[in-house]
Each structure stands twice: as C-alpha cells, then as structure tokens.
Amino acid sequence: MKTHILAAAGAVALFALSPMAGAHEFTQGGITVDHPMAFETAPSARAGGGFMTIANDGDEDDRLIAVRAEFPKVEIHTTLEENGVSKMVHVAAIDLPAGETVALEPGGYHVMFMGLDGDPFEVGEEIEATLVFEKAGELDITFNVEARGAVGHSDHDHDHDHGHDGHEMNH
Ligand SMILES: [Cu+2]
Image 1 (spheres, rainbow, N blue to C red):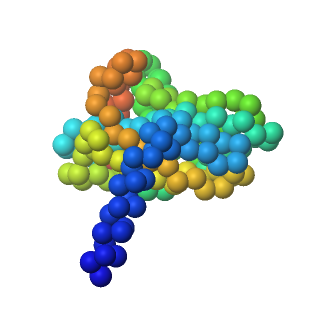
Image 2 (cartoon, helix red, strand yellow):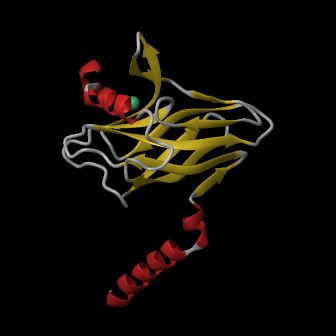
C-alpha cells in the first residue's frame, strides 16, 4: 500500500514539471484554448470570472455551449453597457467562426463561476473545468488564478467587480 501511494505522488510531481503544463494551452480538434485564467476574488465574493482566448483553426464554425466545473453554478456571460452602466448577461453559447480567435476578457465574454460562498479564488489556485464545444466535443482545461492589477487587465476591473457583487440578486 505504501509503495502505491508513493508512485502516485511521483507521477503527479512529474506532470507538474512537464513542459506541457507550463505552456498552459489546451487543444481539441481545431480548437486551441490559450491561457485560461481567473482573477483572485475578495473573501466575500460569491462569483468569479474566468478568461481565455479560443482559436478555431478548423474548417467549420463551432460554438462553446457549456462550461462545467465544481461549483453550484457555472454560466457563460457577456457584458453589455447600458446608459453607461455595464451589466452581465447570461448567454447560451459563444460563436467560434472558423479561422477566428475569440477572446473572453474583462468587459466582454467570460465564464462565471457562481456560489463561491466563503471560498474565494486565491493566487496560485487552479480551477479544473471542462469546456463543451458543439462540434469539437469536450476539453478539460485548468484556469490559473492570478493577482489583480496584472498589466493590461485593469481597465474594466471595477465595473466587472461591481456586477459580480450584485449578481445573484438577478437569479
Ligand atoms: Cu459574469
């Protein structure tokens, strides 16, 4: 029994050190998902956003139709601006036209992990998730939790947070 556990631990360590893990890119069919990440959340946050880019290098259009993860609820959201106030709206799918790259980023499309309930995202944490594509099928990915204020991501942080705080009121 003891040797069995040691062997398993060794396998995990090897995987963590492999170049594949460092690249942080996931592919399935013609779909390539680059750098899935989420920002750390406040301790009281009830929801957190997930971001990435999805490139469709295949010959046919595809769609991201669902995201699964170990949270009470996971939705695909977009962000709309109405009268100068941005708000998040649940969408059924994200279109991925052939030959194009779609960004999920603050102020736009994102994955919403809901029901954190006192277990905030912390820097260095990894969130396992499964993306479900209409044609390419399922793809397991990992969102890396990163610090807020990272270069190039600061513009929409305030609005985004604001929306998240009141989010569960809408459901
Ligand atoms: Cu959202």
